[in-house]
Image (cartoon, rainbow, N blue to C red):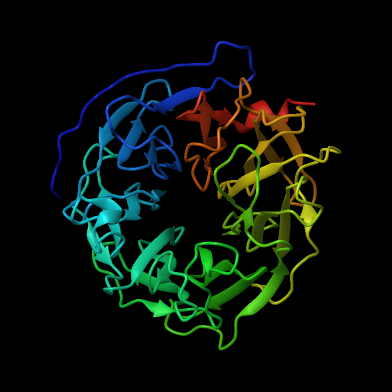
Length: 433
């Protein structure tokens, strides 16, 4: 393992207004030329839940070893470059893996090498130091974007899926976007990528692009993947460690209006799907949850939807709206997790039900009965108003383990972004009315 300098910065900054959940600022936009913090990812150490690691655009790592009382801030480095889309996971041994986009030239979009691969960096010491990274999917001149990983709940086996663009942003009708998959037994060596999707998308990074692939792995090693393309959500699976997949994509849900959503005050907003399996030893073991956002109720009414499968994706339930408000407002950028120790389901998302303008709260929905019923609670201490003149990011994130829930999200105040979390105990939710 190559160790990089680690800068310790301890801070705990709650908002000034009262809330039942103390909000913690992990990163803020500074006047130092660094990319504004957005698109956070977070993971709990599965062997030590007091250890939590967050990844934040472009190259930030924020870590706690005391359950969130103090946090340490550092910068990720790699010879392949670090260019955002962070996705952090922990395996059963407590090792962390940080997946991200590449920028080997260090010149960003001005060089063709930008987005030339996916990179995986590993930490064996709770996020204090990281390997220089393993290259995944390098296939010039194609561009590699939007990675998301999954790890076996008991083994070191893991995988990652992403979108390969023939040329990112191209308007050429012959330019294609496709979903790719790679696997590894321990994160140090990755397989040759294989294409999963049957139907290709375009390269515009909009509704007709094949994008948002999220994998999940069951305790039996079976792998499942879902993604969006051309107003539909597709599903694929492998029962032999990713060697073979379904011959035809399964269309499991319609995403009316597509995944590229128009949200006032947000420069761009996606409703890309999130797929997860329940690996708990409860009656809900093996349940597949598929979450997304869309505007089928109108451009001014974005909602969060959930479907479930109890038989490995053969059949799916009808979509259930997660947000319980009666307002015709926007709920957007959701993410879902399941605590593998108890089977409880948690969903984080932005919510505007309380306002007639663009003011935004953060809500948590939770279910103790396998997604049959949800309760919800506002977890942000104060509202914020995003400004479409700045990049707000493409996702939130959340993790849960051992009764500890850690949602993570981006705020924007006066045009500047910051990233926040809160550490919630499941018992606190159980006491709410």
